[in-house]
Length: 201
Image (tube, rainbow, N blue to C red):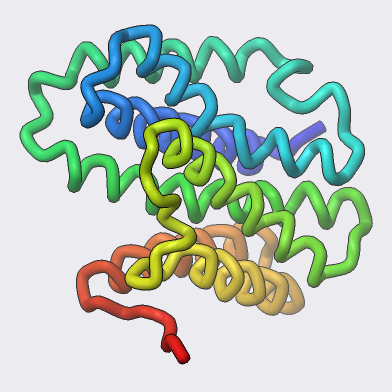
């Protein structure tokens, strides 16, 4: 059975990416059905690919309908409160950064629980954190954030994942998770604020 802390992280990650997807869809002026579809894909895309890669089928959201209900409720709440949000771009960015950190650690933990190599676990964490956003952007006809030179996205997942593995050697697992999540979210936010980017040859 999952620890309470892991359940909370997964819940927060699902909510964060659902809101990210919903606001992205609303920026494109999709109808309610379109918003719900994009929100759902953003929230479960990375986890679905991760589960398929490690052979965990049926995938997580098919085993637990609570996930679908949480996504539906969160997306409808985002639609309802749309008129109270003045800056969609900032809201989208902050929730995307939060979801990135939370889902990266969720993906890594799934790999560790499966007894996989630590390097593979970092890869799984990066896939879990990034792939929902990739699907969201593709469906909305945008260049995926992960492929934009000016965006430090997957790199934040990789660095945060490596930090998580290191901290687990001498810190409580819950503290290690929290520090790694803060690192990923903070790096993503600071990269945009200060224009950090990878060098190009």
